[in-house]
Image (tube, rainbow, N blue to C red; front, side, top):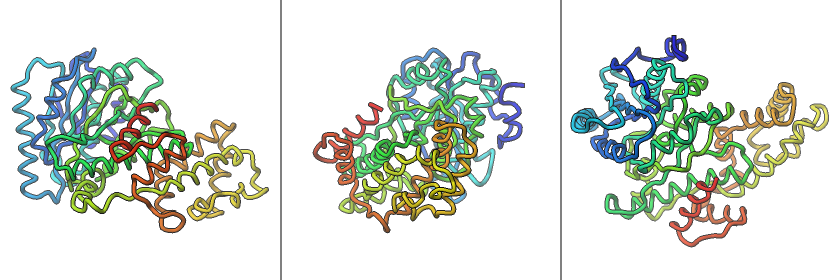
Length: 419
């Protein structure tokens, strides 16, 4: 019995898929969901151009298609598998092995990006279980990405042998210029990436302790941490966001900024929300712009989070946990009864300020923050163009304000790199 055998027996959807035994020094396994991805060889070429890490690597491509996939998409999906197999035959003696998992043959219906990630990650876990390697690293990336040439080296260097590092968000940048896409597409992805980075920096400004991007194509996790988190979910979109919320309270999650993943800015409708659908909408109406959260909402969160220590010290029968002192948007979002019940429960189950704060933010986590932001916009705040929001947040942070969309995006990229 390996370290994950019992978990796999109870939680994996499929029995062992890859019959070939993993190499003994396998230390990284990359999971690649692939639906309608005939250009997947670009990713494999990018991997082949990487410098060698101090371990063997495996690439698990999970070819799948949802129930409503059109005939053209199904043809492209079959071509994905064929292209990957052909590439594998032409590229021997590399530092990695490529395995194509035929999801359509495993399961005839119910496929989603979450199910594809789970299938691949469970199989990666099984292979590390065969090696009895609980510290094996499972990487997630999307089939339309490319990577910086130190990708594997950096991930191994930053995670292997580090008991304090269990999972991470890998730094990413969308291509924002070139000949592969139209100017409308490049401008659209600048807006969307700025929105993503503005949200993360807004969390940092507010004082939220776990500030990380939640991008499915840029996640790494150790095998044992995957087990402890209960594995990947099967959601049709947002699977990455929900998965990371389970990881953060356990500790050991960090931002890996020493390498870069380059997600494609292409238009896509394969998932109901995320990069592809947003780029599609923006490209169709380039003058409409992109609205984002009002920076005043982050200012309110900052005030709210500054009050947390007082919630721990306040007795239940003196002021109902200071509910009346909460900012107005928070009081709209949470009733006094719910607030009193929750804070009392957190206090009764913690012995000190540090444990109170950890338990508090496990409750008022990123998921709840997003619900709060959606709740207060339209009542207390109005959404504003993302360039305006980003500029105002920089002022609130005491930062210099660069000119233009590209300047703003580069500034927020640097903020993310600097931690």
